[in-house]
Picture 1 (tube, rainbow, N blue to C red):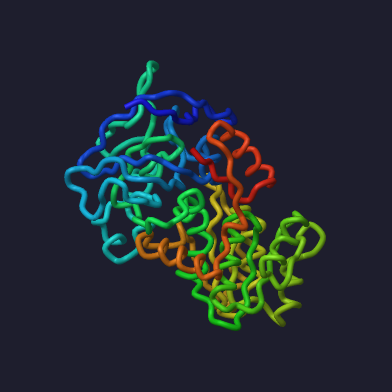
Picture 2 (cartoon, rainbow, N blue to C red):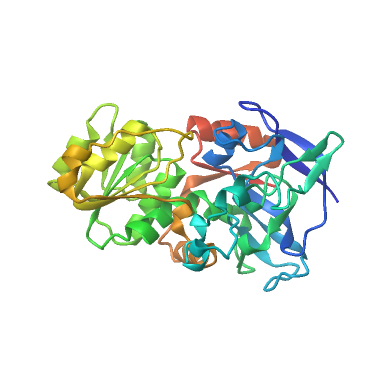
Length: 365
């Protein structure tokens, strides 16, 4: 079939909206009419080739839509089902079988390989094949073929125009808090970065009963918005040493911390802001080969734990419905972070995400 798609062609270059050919879904796939897709920092860094994903390709990995066709071997889905699309994983490796599919040993190939596992691609045009199956979905297209195991069926009443970011950015921040840090009610947390991932982590911490929530950033407007959403403290690290400020606020350090930036000096600040036996998580993506300072001499006696976390270490089929329920109950108002754009304005959505004008853009088809 023919469909429109936004194609990434070169680093630091606007996506091109083209009419392309979409092949038939394979036996393990769903064909989905995409209603909306979030725009994520990861889309931008792949466009800019931080990771070597072959170009041209169709990006997009926070899709939500309606099932149009069901592959012959797929069970549990029917035409007309509403779905939120999560990352692809094999379902057979040790990590998948142990309940940690976001650490699938085949995760990189399945999500960044530029096509199906057999090398075929879903999209093509007069110039040749176009990469597909980014995060198993390539949702910057009006219609796409997705890996069925990454799709999550949601209620018919679910607002698909809103829910796509639950498949990555919102899941990453909230999952890092709820699934990995697992903060105790009445505890303290510091979150470095007030983008969509950091704000999702903050909302999750509030929902979990954390009573001291410290947000760290250099953008005053975002820090003020974080206070509006429930942060108890806001630190502008351009003006104030965040480690000293956090230790003063908490009387020695936070129980939990989250670095959403992937910036080496910020990572170092996170490690030093933790209380004895505190737990810190890094979710921010950095270029391959990036190293960060880690004071093993001073920190040895602290007993801290540092975790590297992908996609909130979530099982999407369990975690995404959980977030939807929290939102419905008014305990996870992630809709406050979003702004919608028509598909034709997708490059403006990228620009607004990059300059901080919009925390979580959502492209609506």
